[in-house]
Image (cartoon, rainbow, N blue to C red; front, side, top):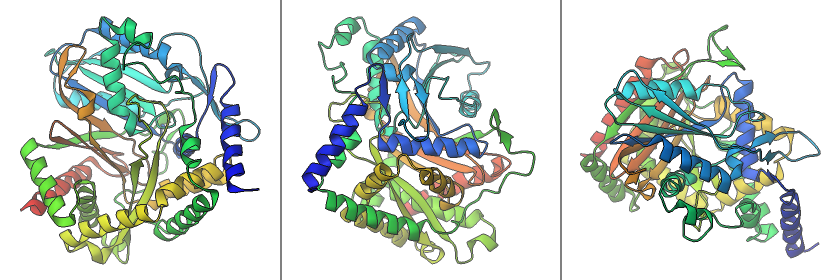
Length: 471
């Protein structure tokens, strides 16, 4: 069979599965994220969830927002769907129910940012049964001083970080008086008519089978070398009896630090001078590795390695809409203890690794591996092993979110931040975003695994190290 025939067959099969009315199969990366969700549930965590916080300068009109949420649900019914997840025979797929997505209004007792983070931490560990619960939640947090916060919480099996800014922008457009025209598809707020298409299958079909298979072999070899063994981390396994249960996961704490516009620009300039490329993600990751090394017990550091997975957007949202699919790849980077001493050399090495892996097609290989193993039990086993011991921390740099716009439901947006889950034994997650020049560092920790004082020290070390880097 020729490569062309093979690719055509893959596309035909995917689209045949997509044809059942009222349902939508998960693409290969969706299924990888679902495997992560299952793994975390089996590890007594709530699941693989991500939150976006839109901090408004004023009071958001709840009825206007509720109307926008309802319209979004009608345009993209997958956000109200329920998951059918069966091993063997039937591929996991979303089943679209009837009804509008709910909007939860919550009156906070305090206007302090800490009250918002406390609610976010509570919502993050609230167990989600995807066969019963919708994959995207909407929370409107009312602060006593009139500065509301919209909290969006989604399962990673539904969407990735690339959909965040388009989702906020879409909601804002659908909240306007002209939203009826948007619903009918008469302006650029309308979803593409082929939203149901499996964009990952289409992406793979661009490449000859031989190239995809060679990239998959390189990616598998890299994972076996970089992710083999236990990475240095701060987290301890939860004590017996404190690990929570499937219906009561261990509580977490969300912490925050930020860099103003001037400091963020200085970091951007310094990272560009060091690597010759724009982008600060590897500079932040280098400081995170150094902070882990500074704070980890000496017995763990000895001969250890520091590893993170770097999420890479595949550029498949060409129409600018949210497109509720995972359209990304995950490439591991890692260094040994001896590389941490020289900060500039460390950042250069991380940049070099990432650039080299992109040149070798590792991002394509990871997607191809996900497609090959999408229905296998091995996917669950390897995913759990990586989440338990393969990384030093769960890290994501979501980049700039300016595309979300400057206003939401008529109110000015002050900032946007994102929160990720934490689980034992890793115990620590760091997500960094940038909006209107301001960088937000959100750390999530499990106190019994990584104590709150230790997580605070970690964040302080990261920002202190970045400040030194800029001098």
